[in-house]
Length: 365
Ligand code: SAH
Ligand code: SF4
Image (cartoon, rainbow, N blue to C red; front, side, top):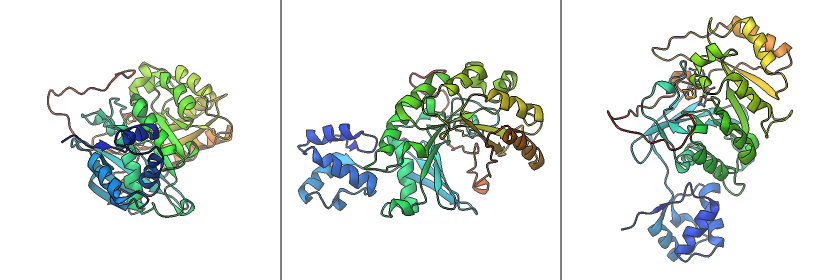
């Protein structure tokens, strides 16, 4: 028996092409796309605009799967976390953070991360592999399933935004991330627009321009330090792409303007990067960039060599940045009790001893 084709992850053109091979007319791709991505249907038998005979033909050759759910947790603050299990047994987490009238899904791009930022739990995980486009989209579909929002009018949905801030470095998996985002942004499907999607990178400079030109989504930069000596330690990728180069890429980011600013993420580490002098230097560095700053109280994890800055220190830091004209909200930690807060994600996928993991052509790999 031949393997069935997974539909989730195919572009609309690819879907039409595959369907044609089985004798389907071109307009069927549009219908099926709508059922899968707009209505959330996984069973061809529920696609009532398609004749029974054709439904069976589809079921014979295609599948609309979801990743398995290994575990799901809900925090006291209603943050929800799903630990997903993919076909090969690898796992990754996805987290939904509800707010008053909107909510963001924090999506993972890799199992683990090849980078080893010293304050990040994901960076300590041994096993790393890229997630496929289907696995990235699968996270969005699982969240819509779990929130029961497929059949609700979009204006009543809580799931409005996506942040690529889960496990992994999205720009080390650019092709799959870009493919997934194009499918997610398709207005006849999941229909989350580029303005509601933010991609966070630790600073893979050569890929940043492409994000703006090809995807046009919002950009977030994990800056965390204002001097190269310190950033080399906190975000080791800095040794390859130092602060000046990173900021130059931001200055010329095609999708940024006064209304759509680049977010600079800055994790607050007690006695490490949280002085007044650091805040003043940050302001100096951001000159001529359409920027806002997001101060993130560091979220602890077992064995980490850091402490979170005090509330007073964070407030003083924020004031300096704010007085210089940059919005600088302090991010309230969400879902800490279920280990779902920034930088706490780590699945129990571990690399088998001696196993080689291929990560494709990626800068810095
Ligand atoms: N790899 C990408 C995206 C995932 S990390 C990146 O680094 O940007 C998402 C954000 O959480 C990043 O800004 C990261 O620096 C931050 N982060 C990581 N560990 C953290 C921790 N323990 N506490 C608070 N923020 C953390
Ligand atoms: Fe990877 Fe981002 Fe964590 Fe750094 S902060 S180890 S790039 S996930």
